[in-house]
Length: 198
Image (cartoon, rainbow, N blue to C red; front, top):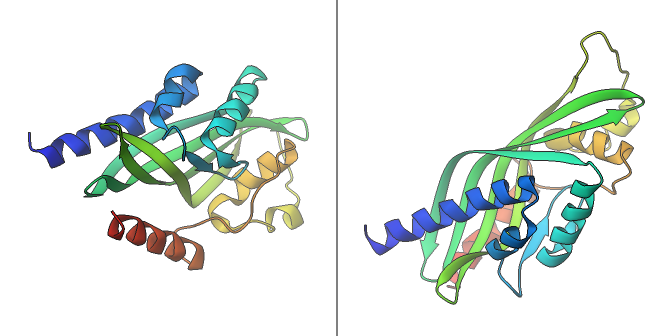
């Protein structure tokens, strides 16, 4: 394979390892996907360093928080020692709202800033793009009425996920990138600059 093909393969493997190791609670290996100094995670419920994200994820995992990730199509733009990767994904969270067990599925993309560090690709920054979501009651016989005021506080792309997480006690960030709009356009501009400065 060419060097570009090798890079694409390594980046794809890193993205897959992120999802598998995080969801399995394999925290030692999960730490290896991040840039050791500059790793940064942005999500609905967390914005901070990779080190703090690993700690918060581990605490949630050990307390029964169920957040799982599934990956789909993938592409990577590579410029020297830097890359931007986009990967189709779903975020699946199970939780109880007002005594009713529910599943929320959010569909979107991982938008990743990567750099080569000491000869291997590492994740510098991950920003999910939230395209659409839905909420389902696990027991078909159960019923749940959502608070429309709380639901409408959040963008369409992740409003059910944000509703569930707010009810569960998380502080959820508003204004994250969706399928269209100023937030995602700004993210794309940051990605373009990241590659141009390689």
